[in-house]
Image (cartoon, rainbow, N blue to C red; front, side):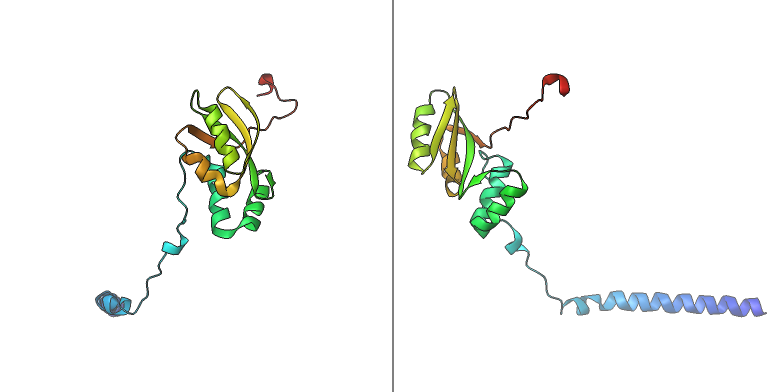
Length: 157
């Protein structure tokens, strides 16, 4: 008989838990009406990524425009990007036959052309002008220079 009593108590407890659960679910919409939803839109970048800027330059520009040169300098140091004040050294890949025009564009944007070879221009450009440079239809890509690694050869790889 003691076993029957325990069984009945378990059934009653299970039924009570089930009823409380159903009551909680039924009351959920009323509880949620008082909740505030956090607007996450301020966390979205305000600067669109440019398809002709490499990833690091896109991030550098995003930080520069959103937070200024101090934060951009910190980002640059963390990612091995060399800045000179608010300017960055870049390689501009140019469409065939358009090197001279893009060289003039770099100068008009306040940049300094250092050297060039075939369809490549190495220049120092103000961070604020990266998007203007990349917007030119004769520019294929703006990227960071590839750093040479002393002593590295094909056999080492």
